[in-house]
Length: 251
Image (cartoon, rainbow, N blue to C red):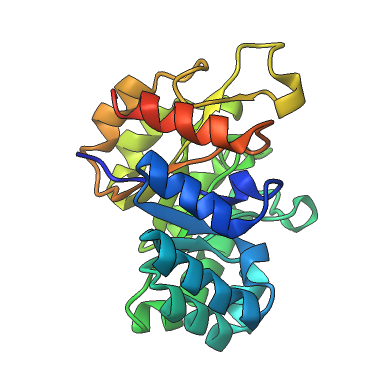
């Protein structure tokens, strides 16, 4: 049976954290995934560890920005150690920092691979988490995701399938190509066109347009170990968490 995780970014607008963790544990989640704001100061990291222990949840994965990964290595390693992370993912690249060519994205992949070295030396996996721009071809016809992994052949991939679909790509084709590097997946759903505009067009898992039942069959054939529910802007985080895990258990 798959153990489901929850990206805590989904509940950023619904504090306090302790209540969120209790709610998730009560619903049957076993893991959570961290994100940047949770590590804003060392006191909060200590509090996070305390709350995780009280809830019985673990945090095997977390997101860290590229600048922090490159320039604050000791802090990242300390946070990962304190909360028991096994894998870390770089989650985004600002528009103004994105390359414009396949060669540029391949160089970016090499940069990520270089940034990964101290974390791999410490026993942590490091990978890239995609949005939609990585599957939109550049002006020279390159697919950024392919180029990133060409430059960083040992990088892991946290596959955000819904963003792949938003970007106009076929997720099954990308899983066929890069499935061997998938160590985590974001389980996120897309509302029918024109619906849920107050939630940025996202849906609770199993209540949107993504064929998660079919996708999960294929994803379970990859090395993926972390199946992480996410909604970028839920109107009610408890509703999202509950309905999503209920649906996902049937996939």
